Amino acid sequence: MIILLFGADALGIRRRLAQLRTDADGGSGMIETNLNAIEGRDAKAQEIIGPAMSPPFLAPFRLVVIEGFLDRFEQGPESRGPRSLDAFSPLFAALESGLPPTTILVFTGGALRRNPMLDRLKKVPGATVEEHAPIAPRELPRYIREEAAARGIRFRAGPFRDVSPDDEELRKAGDPAAYLATLLGSDTLAIASELDKLALFAMGNDVTLDIIYRVCAGERESTSFAFVDAVIDGHHSRALTALEILTLRGTSPAELLAMLMTGYRQAATVIDLLDDGATPEEIGKAINRPWPNLRDRAIARGRRLGHERLRVAFEILVGADRSIKSGEVEDDLALELAVARLAALAPEAAGSRR
Image 1 (cartoon, rainbow, N blue to C red):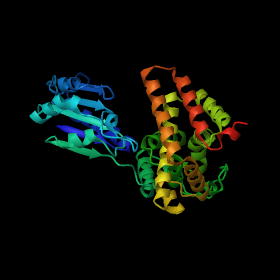
Image 2: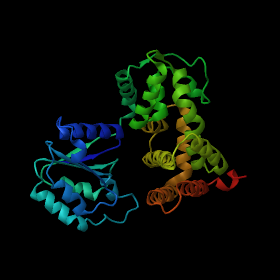
Image 3: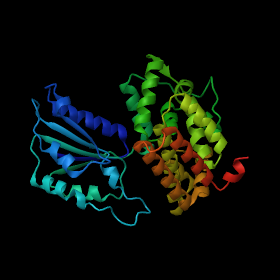
Image 4: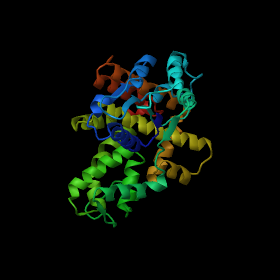
């Protein structure tokens, strides 16, 4: 069995992998002996073929997961041509000759658009494509309510009473699920994490907007959002202040880099929609920022950034990620250098440093 498992719904992918672990174990209790998790970033053909051809030990299946393998071959908008797949010809030949019926081979990846490896693996007989698409903005409140109910959380609608968010449009919110959707977007892992925190905090009591603000939104608005916005806007000193706060709270450089990547991906969506002539309302729905203030700020950032600066920003982020993962540079230093370079991209950066 060959499964191509990818998409933006990271929680859905994680749950699917958990299900496959259960299937492979078959009640034997031997899953750890029959699980091969291989880092896909550097995996070679023979490193995949060997485990995939091995029989399980005292269990019905062997589960072989090539983690992030498909991401390695994703082609960006500036890519000149597809990456060569010649080095994996032995892998394709082995897969097409047939895996043992006791092997579950899974290739994983994130959100993919142009991916020659995915296209090639789709042609392997018996390969199954399982794409976990992002939750559509209009479906997010329903999704959050269902996830909340599974944790025993009861939302109680109504206005803020004890706190007052900085943004006027947020102060008009009344639906806790919709408010969470605005804060977290379609990041399903973040949604699960925040709902877990709310379940522990509420202990069976109703969850209101005030509780969400205190438990979930307060730190996010004062630090995470401020950090990403300051970097994109070119406010280097503000970005470093937010970075220091987040670091003191235990946020890792990899998590901080992921925050920045999410911010620039949102900007990319805005820029593409502006090119297509989308209205502000359409853009707000697409990026899950329906409130005019938040939406218009995001649109303004996209206009200021533009295609060329966005391309350079992604190059900086990819370079920082590579430095962190390879250990070439200390994690903190790699992140600080990336923040400085990104902030310098903003058209107003020179003035904003004063």
